[in-house]
Amino acid sequence: QVQLVESGGGLVQPGGSLRLTCAASGSIFSINAMGWYRQAPGKQRELVASITTAGVPNYVDSVKGRFTISRDNARSTMYLQMNGLKPEDTAVYYCNADPLYLDYWGQGTQVTVSS
Image (tube, rainbow, N blue to C red; front, side, top):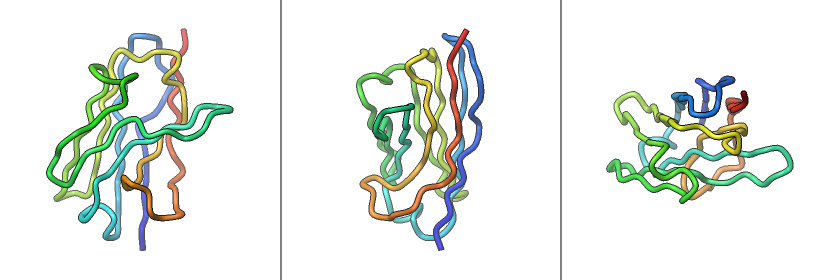
């Protein structure tokens, strides 16, 4: 059974940093590329960063140079280091497979960037 648990969010000032963690259980992590998604109020959920099982990352243009995705396959854990945070990064952040294939989401972790 798949379980995804996101943590590490919080309130941070513009320019600040946060590190998000995704702990996965079940087979989802070992056989899939994984991604960090976010959903801001009134907007659709979007994929912001993904990483293959071999560790090759990919980023949406709006976070390139500021966010770094990584994964620890032995621990079934994925991370998102977010630096230079902007108010427009405010959202609930989720982890999941990329591409999506399950109708399942964890509870997410709230990131709020505000002065």
